[in-house]
Figure 1 (cartoon, each protein chain N blue to C red):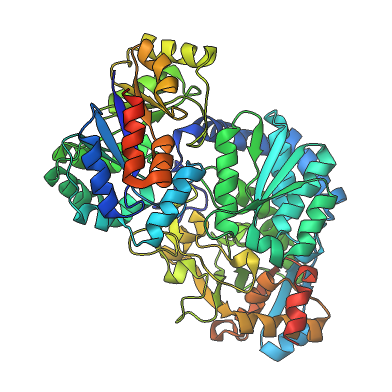
Figure 2 (cartoon, one colour):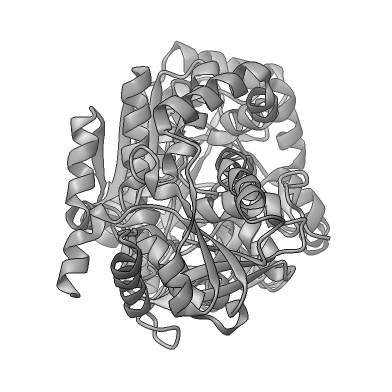
Length: 388
Length: 238
C-alpha cells in the first residue's frame, strides 16, 4: 500500500518529526492547522489568485518536436521555468507565506542551496512586507552570486552558514537553529519536501499545482494520460508536486537523481540509490551517510540537487516500487542542457537538465513522456559557458 | 543540590576524555553526560558544534566511544542525536551500556511517540532510561507526560534556545521553575542551558534545583585541556 499522503506523519516507514522539544510547539501548531488553512476557501481563493496574476500560472505543457524526434519518444515539457522568479519554488513560497500570515508570524527564515528558493522567499517577503533572513552555505554564496544579489535587492538578509561543510545541509541546520532561538515570531519557510512532518506534506500539497495542471493540460492537448512522468529530485519538491496526482494512476513515474562524477565514485548526490535509512533535518528518510551515521557532503554540479537527504515521501515511493529512480552525471546533464537549447531554444536550469538527460532511457522509447522543467538556466550560464 | 556535567566525548581525543573523567572523580559531581559527536548538531551552538567537529576529524564515533570502555564512578549518560544511535543499533547499544554500567540516554530529537512504539520495551529490558527535554513553552500535560516517560531524570532547558547561550536567571525563569514544582516534577528534574559557572548556578541551587553545565565546561576544556577541566571544577566548588 503506497501512501500518497502521510499517515500520522509517516509515509510508510519514512517521515515523522524527529525534532528537539524546543521546536515542538511550532511543529504541533503547524501540524494541527495546516490542512484546515490550506484547504479553506479563503486561502485557496487568495492562493489561486496570486498564482495566476503574480506568478503567471498556468504554465504551458509544451510538446517538443525536435527533441522528441531525436530521442524517439514524445516529450512534453511542463514549463515551470516560465514562473515568476524562474522556477517552481515560488508555488511553495507563496503558499507558505499566506499560511505564515494567517499564523500571525512577522519574520520569515529560509535555507537555500542554488538560491532559487532564497530568491522566491525574498520575493514573497517583499510582496507581503515581512522580514526575511535567508541562510546559505558560505561556499554556495560564492558559486551562485547572481542569486545572492537578487535576494539582497529584494530586501532579504543573506546569512552565510559557516558551520559544517558550508553548503545546503549546513544552511538548513542554521535555519533550524535560528528557529529554535526564535520560535514565537518566526516561520521557517522550508524550500523542499523535506524536514519534520508536516513540512513534506505541506510542500507537496503546495507544489501539486504542477502535476494537477499538467494532468489536465495533457488530457486536453493529447488525450488521456501520459505513459510516463519524469522529474529531477534533490530534496524533491518539484518531483513531489509533479508526481502527486499520478501516483494512483496507471502511469510510470521516474525520479532522476544527480550522479555527479559517477555513481561508482564518492562524488554524487544519489540519496535513494546509494543512501541508507536515517534521520536528517527531522525526518526519517534515505541519507548519504557513513556507517556510524555521520552525514556525508554530497556532490553535484547543480547546487539544487546537492542535498544528502531526500523527501521522505520519495523514500517511501522508491522503496515501495511506485517510483523508479534513475540518474544523470554532471556531463550527461550538461549535454542534455545544450541539446534542449539547440533543438528547442530553451535554456534549462542544471537541475532540470538532469531530468532531460534521463529521457534517453530504454524504458521511455516510443512513450508519451511528461517532464517537469523545474527552472530556467540563467543562473547557470557561467557553468554552461565553461562547457561549450 | 548537585551538578551534572556535559563533555564532548573524544574532544580533543578519547584519552583526554578518560583523564577528564578521572579529574571529575575528585569532585562531588553527580553525573556526566558523554556527548556523542555528530556532523549536524542542530540544537547546539558554536562551542559544542566545534568540539564535535574536531572530535569527528580525529575519527571519533559511537563505536569508538563504546569501545573505549571509559571508567567513572559517577552516573554516566550518553547524549547525542538520534541518527548516530539509530545507525549503531539500539539493541547493541543498550546491551553495551548495561555492561558498562551507563545509566541512560539523552536524545533530544527522539520523539516520545517513536520511543513508545519502537524502543520503550528494549530500554526497559536493559534497565536504561531515556531523558526527555521540556522547555518553558512546553504545556503542563506534556511536562508531566515526559517526566513520567523519562528514566532517571527530566531535562528542563531554561530557555528555548540552542546550547551555549548565557541566560540571566530572571523572573520568567523563576516562574518556570515554580510551574515545574507545582507539576510535581522538581525532584526528577535537572535544569540546563545557559548555566556557565557557580554564580549562574547559585540562583538554581538557592531554590533547590539540580543543574547541568555543558558548553561552559566544553569551553574550559577547549581553552586548557584537562587542566581547564580541573580549574573549572575548582572554581565551581570553591
